[in-house]
Length: 282
Ligand SMILES: Nc1nc2c(ncn2[C@@H]2O[C@H](COP(=O)(O)OP(=O)(O)OP(=O)(O)O)[C@@H](O)[C@H]2O)c(=O)[nH]1
Ligand SMILES: [Mg+2]
Image (tube, rainbow, N blue to C red; front, side):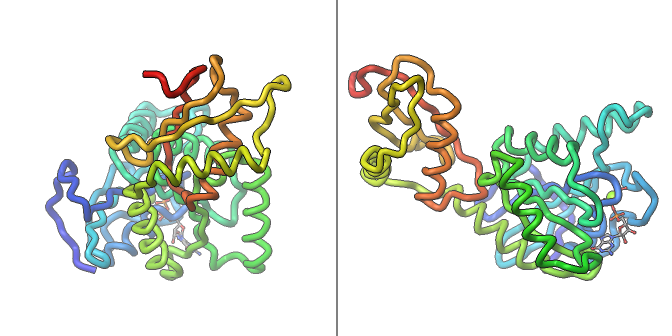
């Protein structure tokens, strides 16, 4: 990996991926940051809340320039009594707008908390590629069981689980780190995917033929026509046969089926449902 020191965050050449490491204090963010850069740049240690400023740097991996940000640990608002920590948190939350990928680090020896869900929601709301990484996996004895418990927990407790990527690493002993970088670059490439109109509309036909669509107050909502809007990444318009707004139960079901059909797992997508009694009229 080749390191570069001068950065221009506005230079968004296609082979550049901008990512942030976020998570609670002590989850191992700075250890991962240093490990990726092969240099001790950001201080690490057991002291809670050690990182107090943003650290930014970059490295090359398989012809891609990764720009990486290490951030101060995020705690819940009601646990913060210090003005400086509040402003540090705000800086981190603002930075999430500017990046492509968020790595949410969780200490595998601790429980998945509301604060972790909050950070995950924020990244997803802002349409970022999200990786939830359980760090310190070296400290887990029964790794297989841990993995299956986590996956089961997220599937049952987190309706957006198809939007996220889950993995297990050890930042300290450099386990599974290169494979995460490859996965990040694969997901980033997926954002450029274009799906032809006829494929989208065949998918709509299949949905209707299989009679899978949920009914709302005994009325079936039918998607009539679908297009990918070419100006935005993975953005689609779906015209439906109803004059009313599509209900959540329908949009959630539709999105899950759509993601499965076109292998759009772990990436943000924009689906807008357009209500119209005649979708073909202009
Ligand atoms: N066993 C083990 N310990 C780790 C691992 N990653 C980090 N640690 C340890 O966890 C402690 C905290 O690591 P840091 O990298 O400073 O954590 P941080 O998330 O940057 O913490 P803040 O800056 O305070 O938010 C250090 O003692 C690290 O050595 C890991 O994969 N395995
Ligand atoms: Mg740190």
